[in-house]
Image 1 (cartoon, protein in one colour):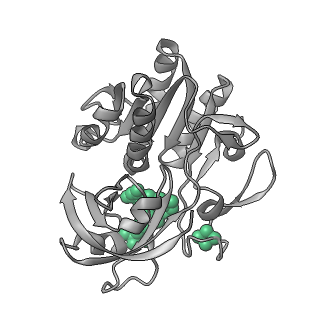
Image 2 (cartoon, rainbow, N blue to C red):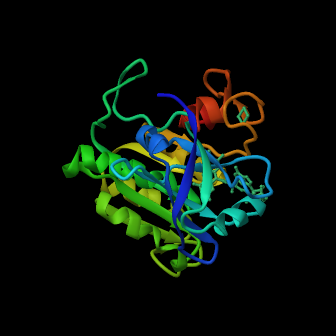
Length: 271
Ligand SMILES: Cc1cc2nc3c(=O)[nH]c(=O)nc-3n(C[C@H](O)[C@H](O)[C@H](O)COP(=O)(O)OP(=O)(O)OC[C@H]3O[C@@H](n4cnc5c(N)ncnc54)[C@H](O)[C@@H]3O)c2cc1C
Ligand code: FES
């Protein structure tokens, strides 16, 4: 699999909530290669930001040659993306990094199919790459679709369910303000889920503070757990060393953009 830069074009750029947008991009070469958990770096070539911005691949439609990105308008770069209209150009670099691993056979070899039930946990815009991950799992084993724990701020962010319901067995919702589902954070719902279901694998993407608590509980229970990390990125291809961290088990200096963004939980968080 190789990374490339493709000049794509915007197909849709829809408003999902106050500050979240869903952009469909025609970029057939990147779409043909992107795997669940990988990301792309995009740039509006006629905009004013110099650096590309990273976004998880929320889904791909290989037949149509399209990528879906779901992004929160956070600052200058994403504001400019939000202003793009259908048919406008957008440069897409990717797919980048290594995505989620499925069904470890031994020593870093993977079958692509999990043994037992998977729980996907997404917080905020961290839900985005888990849509593709849920579809990947559901298509391989329709009788063993993943469960999804969705941790969002309020009922206004329940739009994620529309993307997820077809590919998940059940969606458990927590909202910070209690306007939908269980009031609180994703971690508040995890013990009950683990008591009710035989979960063998957990894959998480969201704010680090959220992932830490969830991953620690998974590790305590001996459940295989992978986390997808986010850090501000300049180059996105392992050159600038701006996104490194020291692995807790290996002691290796990992580059999130190149060696991740997905890592085994024990490499990121203390047990
Ligand atoms: C691998 C990866 C995947 C990502 N996937 C998504 C995604 O699917 N959807 C999405 O909405 N966002 C995602 N992000 C975050 C996204 O890249 C940033 O929100 C975006 O680059 C901000 O650009 P900006 O110019 O609008 O904001 P800036 O003006 O650069 O910053 C605005 C605010 O956002 C914060 N910020 C900037 N970059 C990051 C970052 N990497 N992580 C956390 N906070 C940041 C800044 O600290 C600041 O507070 C991802 C980041 C990484 C590293
Ligand atoms: S962003 Fe440059 S090394 Fe990761």
